[in-house]
Image (tube, rainbow, N blue to C red):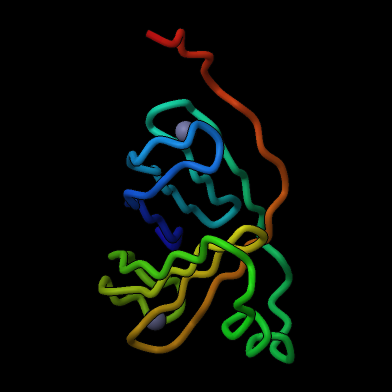
Length: 121
Ligand SMILES: [Zn+2]
Ligand SMILES: [Zn+2]
């Protein structure tokens, strides 16, 4: 199976509910999702074309609030090694990169929705 799959989480202050809770991150080849475990606020990212000339821009584009630099374990589609990947999640993009061979996936922000409507206590 050549599909890349990452399931991880990042504890941070949710941009929607403002609570310091886990944000669940799921990445497969056709889509990436970031879901707040508290309020269900979901951000969907879709793959963008792999444009080599823009790689540097993606990795150095800081200036948005809320950039997460994470580690995740995944199986690389390119070299086939299961190992550490760097993952960068920003407001408008999500990137994963294999530490073994440098192969990267780029996703850009597509839409967001709120999956749950918790009743405040
Ligand atoms: Zn939330
Ligand atoms: Zn690789």
